[in-house]
Amino acid sequence: MMFDINEFVDELHKKFEQKYDPTWIMPSEITTCLRKSFYIRKKGKNVIGESAVYGIAIHNTVQDVAKKFNCEIEKEVNGKIDGIEIKGRADLVCSDSVIEIKTTTIHDQRHYFQLAIYAKLLNLNKAYMLYIDRDTANITFFQIDISFVLPFAIERVRAFTNALVNNKLPSKEYSSLCKYCIYKTYCDNDTL
Image (cartoon, rainbow, N blue to C red; front, side, top):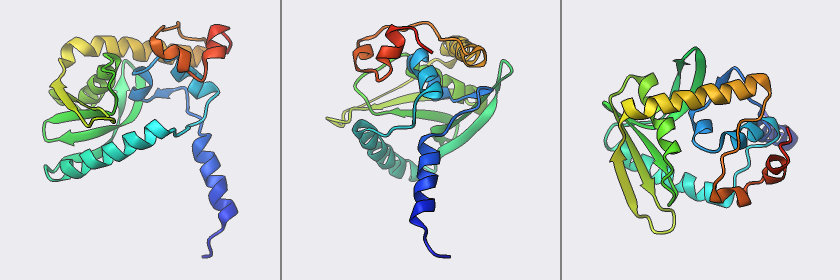
């Protein structure tokens, strides 16, 4: 079979313009502003920026180390919580623990929601956040209390699913990151 560059480029377009079914969500969608996640689903594309490339490189390094500890990498996680289908990939599953890797200096508590969802669906009792600063390589890690975080995560899952199914904007979640959001104009005008 000969390589067809046009077919290859068409497949890339499909991947970057992938639309998601509103009957399921990804745990990563509840770790950021729900309105931003809503806009990504409705208007956006899967754009890979420079910071994402750094994040991918750091993830790959961590995953190389995790292989030495027989951890499963990018483990597919599927299941239902409150009747809502969840699909995602846990960064690392190591024996009785799930580990979420974030490559940022911002330790946002919403990141814990993704981890709690994975722990619940995988039926694991230990869940660890692993933050790696992409500028300094400083590593911070800690265990989260799944039983405390999970009810908040489930509430965000419900809210996001409700917004998608009813095509209704989620409430605004103000932060210092709003000024950099590519959907700021839409959000400021409450535009679908």
